[in-house]
Amino acid sequence: MPQFFRKIFLALFLALTLSVYAACQSSDNGETGFDTVEIFAMDTVISIKAYGTNTEKALDAAVQEIYRLEKLFSVTEKDSEIYKLNSLKSITASDEVVNLFTLSQEISAKTDGAFDISVYPLVSLYGFTKGEYRVPEQSELEAALGCVGYEHILIQGDKIEIPSGAGVDLGAIAKGYCGDRVAAVLEQNDVSSAVISIGGNVRLLGQKPDADGYSIAIRDPNDTQEYIGSVTVSDCSVVTSGSYQRYFEENGRIYHHIIDPKTGLCADSGLSSVTVICKDGATADALSTAFFVMGQEQAEQYCRQTDEISAIFVSDNKEISVIGEVDFTPVESSEYTYSTAK
Ligand code: ADP
Ligand code: MG
Image 1 (cartoon, helix red, strand yellow):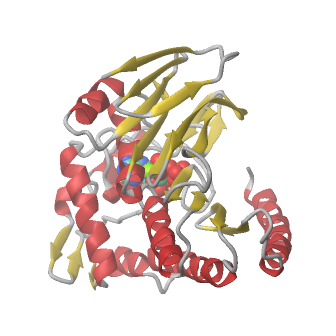
Image 2: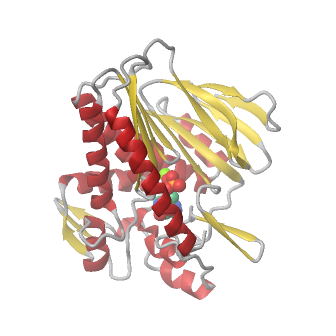
Protein backbone atom coordinates (compact mmCIF):
# COMPACT_ATOMS: atom_id res chain seq x y z
CA MET A 1 0.00 0.00 0.00
CA PRO A 2 1.48 3.40 -0.89
CA GLN A 3 2.67 5.36 2.16
CA PHE A 4 0.00 8.06 1.76
CA PHE A 5 -2.92 5.58 1.72
CA ARG A 6 -1.27 3.61 4.47
CA LYS A 7 -1.27 6.71 6.68
CA ILE A 8 -4.94 7.45 5.92
CA PHE A 9 -5.82 3.83 6.58
CA LEU A 10 -3.96 3.91 9.91
CA ALA A 11 -5.64 7.17 10.94
CA LEU A 12 -9.09 5.78 10.14
CA PHE A 13 -8.25 2.54 11.84
CA LEU A 14 -7.05 4.34 14.98
CA ALA A 15 -10.17 6.49 15.15
CA LEU A 16 -12.31 3.37 14.82
CA THR A 17 -10.39 1.24 17.28
CA LEU A 18 -10.23 3.97 19.90
CA SER A 19 -14.01 4.15 19.83
CA VAL A 20 -14.25 0.35 19.97
CA TYR A 21 -11.81 0.37 22.86
CA ALA A 22 -13.85 3.00 24.69
CA ALA A 23 -17.01 0.98 24.07
CA CYS A 24 -15.36 -2.20 25.29
CA GLN A 25 -14.03 -0.52 28.36
CA SER A 26 -17.40 0.74 29.40
CA SER A 27 -19.15 -2.61 29.02
CA ASP A 28 -18.24 -5.33 31.44
CA ASN A 29 -19.82 -8.22 29.63
CA GLY A 30 -21.01 -10.01 32.77
CA GLU A 31 -23.67 -12.09 31.08
CA THR A 32 -21.55 -13.81 28.45
CA GLY A 33 -18.56 -13.67 30.76
CA PHE A 34 -15.86 -11.91 28.76
CA ASP A 35 -14.54 -8.50 27.78
CA THR A 36 -12.62 -7.55 24.68
CA VAL A 37 -10.29 -4.78 23.63
CA GLU A 38 -8.79 -4.00 20.23
CA ILE A 39 -5.92 -1.61 19.50
CA PHE A 40 -3.43 -0.90 16.74
CA ALA A 41 0.16 -1.28 17.93
CA MET A 42 3.41 -2.90 16.73
CA ASP A 43 2.19 -2.13 13.21
CA THR A 44 -0.71 -4.58 13.49
CA VAL A 45 -4.17 -5.11 14.94
CA ILE A 46 -4.09 -6.52 18.47
CA SER A 47 -7.16 -7.92 20.16
CA ILE A 48 -7.58 -9.43 23.61
CA LYS A 49 -10.56 -11.39 24.85
CA ALA A 50 -10.48 -11.96 28.61
CA TYR A 51 -12.98 -14.32 30.22
CA GLY A 52 -14.52 -13.51 33.59
CA THR A 53 -16.14 -10.46 35.12
CA ASN A 54 -14.55 -7.16 36.14
CA THR A 55 -11.72 -7.60 33.66
CA GLU A 56 -11.32 -3.88 32.80
CA LYS A 57 -8.34 -3.37 35.09
CA ALA A 58 -6.60 -6.43 33.66
CA LEU A 59 -7.26 -5.30 30.08
CA ASP A 60 -6.02 -1.80 30.86
CA ALA A 61 -2.81 -3.22 32.32
CA ALA A 62 -2.44 -5.48 29.25
CA VAL A 63 -2.78 -2.53 26.86
CA GLN A 64 -0.18 -0.55 28.83
CA GLU A 65 2.17 -3.54 28.63
CA ILE A 66 1.80 -3.66 24.84
CA TYR A 67 2.62 0.05 24.50
CA ARG A 68 5.60 -0.38 26.84
CA LEU A 69 7.01 -3.22 24.71
CA GLU A 70 6.30 -1.37 21.47
CA LYS A 71 8.46 1.50 22.77
CA LEU A 72 11.19 -0.83 23.99
CA PHE A 73 11.57 -2.79 20.74
CA SER A 74 10.78 -0.24 18.02
CA VAL A 75 13.45 0.22 15.32
CA THR A 76 12.11 3.68 14.49
CA GLU A 77 11.42 5.30 17.91
CA LYS A 78 14.48 7.21 19.05
CA ASP A 79 14.02 6.28 22.72
CA SER A 80 13.92 2.53 22.16
CA GLU A 81 16.85 0.38 23.23
CA ILE A 82 16.89 -1.20 19.77
CA TYR A 83 17.07 2.19 18.03
CA LYS A 84 19.94 3.16 20.32
CA LEU A 85 21.78 -0.10 19.66
CA ASN A 86 21.36 0.32 15.90
CA SER A 87 22.70 3.86 15.96
CA LEU A 88 25.35 3.67 18.70
CA LYS A 89 26.32 -0.01 18.08
CA SER A 90 26.81 -0.55 21.81
CA ILE A 91 24.38 -0.16 24.72
CA THR A 92 23.80 -1.06 28.33
CA ALA A 93 20.56 -2.98 27.96
CA SER A 94 17.67 -3.81 30.29
CA ASP A 95 17.41 -7.39 31.57
CA GLU A 96 14.41 -7.89 29.34
CA VAL A 97 16.27 -6.95 26.16
CA VAL A 98 19.30 -9.02 27.20
CA ASN A 99 17.04 -12.04 27.79
CA LEU A 100 15.28 -11.68 24.44
CA PHE A 101 18.61 -11.28 22.63
CA THR A 102 19.95 -14.36 24.41
CA LEU A 103 16.90 -16.41 23.37
CA SER A 104 17.24 -15.05 19.81
CA GLN A 105 20.88 -16.12 19.67
CA GLU A 106 19.99 -19.63 20.91
CA ILE A 107 17.31 -20.00 18.24
CA SER A 108 19.67 -18.67 15.55
CA ALA A 109 22.25 -21.29 16.53
CA LYS A 110 19.65 -24.09 16.54
CA THR A 111 18.24 -23.06 13.14
CA ASP A 112 21.63 -22.59 11.51
CA GLY A 113 21.01 -18.87 11.14
CA ALA A 114 17.62 -19.14 9.38
CA PHE A 115 16.30 -16.92 12.18
CA ASP A 116 18.69 -14.01 12.62
CA ILE A 117 17.80 -10.65 14.19
CA SER A 118 20.83 -9.06 12.49
CA VAL A 119 18.90 -9.26 9.20
CA TYR A 120 17.91 -5.59 9.69
CA PRO A 121 20.18 -4.03 6.99
CA LEU A 122 18.53 -6.35 4.44
CA VAL A 123 14.98 -5.66 5.67
CA SER A 124 15.72 -1.91 5.41
CA LEU A 125 17.02 -2.23 1.84
CA TYR A 126 13.64 -3.58 0.73
CA GLY A 127 11.99 -0.68 2.59
CA PHE A 128 9.92 -2.89 4.89
CA THR A 129 10.87 -0.81 7.94
CA LYS A 130 9.34 2.42 6.65
CA GLY A 131 6.88 1.07 4.10
CA GLU A 132 8.93 2.63 1.27
CA TYR A 133 9.26 -0.49 -0.82
CA ARG A 134 11.92 -1.05 -3.47
CA VAL A 135 13.90 -3.91 -4.99
CA PRO A 136 17.58 -3.62 -3.99
CA GLU A 137 20.44 -4.02 -6.47
CA GLN A 138 22.52 -7.19 -6.11
CA SER A 139 25.54 -5.02 -5.13
CA GLU A 140 23.51 -3.44 -2.30
CA LEU A 141 22.45 -6.89 -1.08
CA GLU A 142 26.04 -8.08 -1.12
CA ALA A 143 27.23 -5.08 0.89
CA ALA A 144 24.42 -5.56 3.45
CA LEU A 145 25.09 -9.33 3.69
CA GLY A 146 28.59 -8.46 4.92
CA CYS A 147 26.99 -6.91 8.01
CA VAL A 148 24.57 -9.80 8.73
CA GLY A 149 25.42 -12.66 11.11
CA TYR A 150 24.02 -13.37 14.57
CA GLU A 151 27.43 -14.60 15.74
CA HIS A 152 28.70 -11.00 15.56
CA ILE A 153 26.20 -9.79 18.18
CA LEU A 154 28.09 -9.70 21.47
CA ILE A 155 26.21 -10.01 24.75
CA GLN A 156 28.34 -9.59 27.87
CA GLY A 157 26.39 -9.10 31.08
CA ASP A 158 24.15 -6.12 30.37
CA LYS A 159 26.26 -4.86 27.45
CA ILE A 160 25.19 -5.56 23.89
CA GLU A 161 27.46 -4.70 20.97
CA ILE A 162 27.11 -5.02 17.21
CA PRO A 163 29.68 -4.28 14.48
CA SER A 164 29.61 -1.02 12.55
CA GLY A 165 27.21 -1.30 9.61
CA ALA A 166 25.15 -3.93 11.47
CA GLY A 167 21.63 -3.54 12.83
CA VAL A 168 19.01 -5.65 14.58
CA ASP A 169 15.29 -6.08 14.16
CA LEU A 170 13.13 -8.05 16.60
CA GLY A 171 10.17 -8.11 14.17
CA ALA A 172 10.14 -11.90 13.97
CA ILE A 173 10.11 -12.52 17.74
CA ALA A 174 8.72 -9.40 19.48
CA LYS A 175 5.03 -10.09 18.85
CA GLY A 176 5.32 -13.61 20.21
CA TYR A 177 7.14 -12.31 23.28
CA CYS A 178 4.50 -9.61 23.69
CA GLY A 179 1.80 -12.31 23.73
CA ASP A 180 3.60 -14.06 26.59
CA ARG A 181 3.93 -10.81 28.54
CA VAL A 182 0.27 -9.90 28.02
CA ALA A 183 -0.72 -13.38 29.24
CA ALA A 184 1.44 -12.88 32.35
CA VAL A 185 -0.03 -9.43 33.05
CA LEU A 186 -3.58 -10.74 32.68
CA GLU A 187 -2.79 -13.58 35.06
CA GLN A 188 -1.34 -11.16 37.63
CA ASN A 189 -4.65 -9.32 37.38
CA ASP A 190 -6.68 -12.47 38.14
CA VAL A 191 -7.67 -13.38 34.58
CA SER A 192 -7.17 -17.12 34.06
CA SER A 193 -8.57 -17.54 30.53
CA ALA A 194 -7.89 -15.29 27.55
CA VAL A 195 -7.19 -15.15 23.83
CA ILE A 196 -4.53 -12.64 22.76
CA SER A 197 -4.21 -12.06 19.03
CA ILE A 198 -1.30 -9.99 17.70
CA GLY A 199 -1.37 -10.02 13.91
CA GLY A 200 -0.67 -13.64 12.97
CA ASN A 201 0.31 -14.50 16.55
CA VAL A 202 -2.19 -16.02 18.95
CA ARG A 203 -1.43 -16.60 22.64
CA LEU A 204 -3.93 -18.56 24.70
CA LEU A 205 -4.06 -18.21 28.44
CA GLY A 206 -5.38 -21.20 30.38
CA GLN A 207 -8.40 -23.25 29.36
CA LYS A 208 -11.43 -21.88 27.55
CA PRO A 209 -14.29 -21.84 30.08
CA ASP A 210 -16.85 -24.61 29.38
CA ALA A 211 -15.01 -25.98 26.32
CA ASP A 212 -12.38 -28.57 25.43
CA GLY A 213 -10.08 -25.94 24.05
CA TYR A 214 -9.85 -22.76 22.03
CA SER A 215 -10.48 -23.26 18.33
CA ILE A 216 -7.96 -21.21 16.34
CA ALA A 217 -8.47 -20.88 12.60
CA ILE A 218 -5.43 -21.06 10.29
CA ARG A 219 -5.63 -18.64 7.38
CA ASP A 220 -5.48 -19.77 3.76
CA PRO A 221 -2.23 -18.19 2.47
CA ASN A 222 -3.70 -18.05 -1.04
CA ASP A 223 -6.95 -16.37 0.00
CA THR A 224 -6.67 -14.46 3.24
CA GLN A 225 -10.47 -14.24 3.58
CA GLU A 226 -10.56 -18.03 3.92
CA TYR A 227 -9.17 -20.68 6.27
CA ILE A 228 -7.51 -24.03 5.64
CA GLY A 229 -8.59 -25.47 8.98
CA SER A 230 -8.36 -24.98 12.71
CA VAL A 231 -6.49 -26.26 15.74
CA THR A 232 -8.08 -26.93 19.11
CA VAL A 233 -5.59 -25.99 21.81
CA SER A 234 -5.18 -24.55 25.33
CA ASP A 235 -2.54 -22.62 27.22
CA CYS A 236 -0.09 -22.22 24.33
CA SER A 237 0.90 -20.06 21.37
CA VAL A 238 -0.16 -20.52 17.75
CA VAL A 239 1.99 -18.41 15.43
CA THR A 240 1.90 -18.23 11.64
CA SER A 241 4.51 -16.78 9.29
CA GLY A 242 3.62 -16.43 5.65
CA SER A 243 4.68 -14.59 2.55
CA TYR A 244 1.14 -13.15 2.30
CA GLN A 245 1.49 -11.12 5.52
CA ARG A 246 3.57 -8.23 4.18
CA TYR A 247 4.74 -7.84 0.61
CA PHE A 248 4.91 -5.63 -2.45
CA GLU A 249 4.85 -6.38 -6.15
CA GLU A 250 7.23 -5.11 -8.80
CA ASN A 251 7.37 -6.14 -12.46
CA GLY A 252 5.01 -9.01 -11.75
CA ARG A 253 7.15 -10.38 -8.92
CA ILE A 254 6.21 -10.61 -5.26
CA TYR A 255 8.73 -9.40 -2.67
CA HIS A 256 7.75 -10.40 0.87
CA HIS A 257 9.12 -9.57 4.32
CA ILE A 258 10.78 -12.85 5.35
CA ILE A 259 14.39 -12.71 4.24
CA ASP A 260 16.85 -15.55 3.92
CA PRO A 261 19.83 -14.18 5.91
CA LYS A 262 22.26 -16.23 3.78
CA THR A 263 21.22 -14.85 0.37
CA GLY A 264 19.52 -11.57 1.22
CA LEU A 265 16.60 -12.64 -0.98
CA CYS A 266 12.99 -13.16 0.05
CA ALA A 267 12.79 -16.70 1.44
CA ASP A 268 11.65 -19.11 -1.25
CA SER A 269 11.66 -22.58 0.25
CA GLY A 270 8.45 -23.87 -1.33
CA LEU A 271 6.25 -22.89 1.61
CA SER A 272 3.32 -20.48 1.58
CA SER A 273 2.91 -20.49 5.35
CA VAL A 274 4.12 -22.19 8.52
CA THR A 275 2.24 -22.33 11.80
CA VAL A 276 4.12 -23.25 14.96
CA ILE A 277 2.34 -24.37 18.11
CA CYS A 278 4.23 -24.42 21.41
CA LYS A 279 3.91 -22.98 24.88
CA ASP A 280 6.37 -20.10 24.64
CA GLY A 281 5.18 -17.39 22.25
CA ALA A 282 8.62 -15.87 21.58
CA THR A 283 9.94 -19.30 20.56
CA ALA A 284 6.87 -20.02 18.41
CA ASP A 285 7.26 -16.66 16.65
CA ALA A 286 10.99 -17.05 15.97
CA LEU A 287 10.59 -20.66 14.83
CA SER A 288 7.72 -19.90 12.45
CA THR A 289 10.00 -17.39 10.69
CA ALA A 290 12.98 -19.79 10.78
CA PHE A 291 10.91 -22.71 9.42
CA PHE A 292 9.62 -20.52 6.59
CA VAL A 293 13.24 -19.83 5.62
CA MET A 294 14.55 -23.40 6.19
CA GLY A 295 11.79 -25.16 4.27
CA GLN A 296 9.71 -28.12 5.29
CA GLU A 297 12.26 -30.91 5.27
CA GLN A 298 14.70 -29.22 7.64
CA ALA A 299 11.90 -27.82 9.78
CA GLU A 300 10.38 -31.29 10.20
CA GLN A 301 13.77 -32.58 11.33
CA TYR A 302 13.87 -29.81 13.90
CA CYS A 303 10.38 -30.72 15.19
CA ARG A 304 11.26 -34.41 15.46
CA GLN A 305 13.95 -33.61 18.03
CA THR A 306 11.43 -32.34 20.56
CA ASP A 307 7.91 -33.13 21.84
CA GLU A 308 7.27 -29.50 22.61
CA ILE A 309 6.77 -28.16 19.10
CA SER A 310 4.06 -28.92 16.56
CA ALA A 311 3.86 -27.34 13.12
CA ILE A 312 1.49 -27.02 10.20
CA PHE A 313 3.12 -26.50 6.82
CA VAL A 314 1.28 -25.20 3.77
CA SER A 315 3.35 -25.71 0.64
CA ASP A 316 3.23 -23.68 -2.55
CA ASN A 317 1.66 -26.72 -4.23
CA LYS A 318 -1.20 -26.66 -1.76
CA GLU A 319 -0.24 -29.53 0.49
CA ILE A 320 -0.96 -29.21 4.18
CA SER A 321 1.25 -31.32 6.50
CA VAL A 322 0.89 -31.48 10.23
CA ILE A 323 3.75 -32.63 12.43
CA GLY A 324 3.53 -33.29 16.19
CA GLU A 325 0.72 -33.77 18.67
CA VAL A 326 -1.85 -31.20 17.64
CA ASP A 327 -5.58 -31.47 17.11
CA PHE A 328 -5.99 -30.06 13.55
CA THR A 329 -9.27 -30.14 11.61
CA PRO A 330 -8.92 -29.28 7.92
CA VAL A 331 -11.70 -27.38 6.18
CA GLU A 332 -13.64 -29.98 4.18
CA SER A 333 -14.24 -28.06 0.99
CA SER A 334 -10.60 -27.07 0.84
CA GLU A 335 -8.68 -27.50 -2.43
CA TYR A 336 -5.66 -28.56 -0.40
CA THR A 337 -4.38 -32.09 0.15
CA TYR A 338 -3.71 -32.99 3.74
CA SER A 339 -1.37 -35.37 5.57
CA THR A 340 0.01 -35.92 9.06
CA ALA A 341 3.52 -37.00 9.98
CA LYS A 342 4.97 -38.11 13.28
P1 ADP B 1 5.13 -11.21 11.00
O1 ADP B 1 5.87 -10.05 11.56
O2 ADP B 1 4.30 -10.89 9.80
O3 ADP B 1 4.39 -12.00 12.03
P2 ADP B 1 7.47 -12.86 11.08
O4 ADP B 1 7.28 -13.22 12.51
O5 ADP B 1 7.87 -13.97 10.19
O6 ADP B 1 6.22 -12.21 10.43
O7 ADP B 1 8.59 -11.73 11.08
C1 ADP B 1 8.98 -11.09 9.91
C2 ADP B 1 9.76 -9.84 10.29
O8 ADP B 1 10.97 -10.19 10.95
C3 ADP B 1 10.16 -9.02 9.08
O9 ADP B 1 9.26 -7.97 8.86
C4 ADP B 1 11.54 -8.52 9.45
O10 ADP B 1 11.43 -7.36 10.24
C5 ADP B 1 12.10 -9.62 10.33
N1 ADP B 1 12.77 -10.72 9.59
C6 ADP B 1 12.70 -11.02 8.27
N2 ADP B 1 13.41 -12.12 7.97
C7 ADP B 1 13.95 -12.54 9.14
C8 ADP B 1 14.80 -13.64 9.51
N3 ADP B 1 15.22 -14.54 8.62
N4 ADP B 1 15.16 -13.74 10.83
C9 ADP B 1 14.75 -12.85 11.74
N5 ADP B 1 13.95 -11.80 11.46
C10 ADP B 1 13.54 -11.64 10.17
MG1 MG C 1 8.12 -14.77 13.60
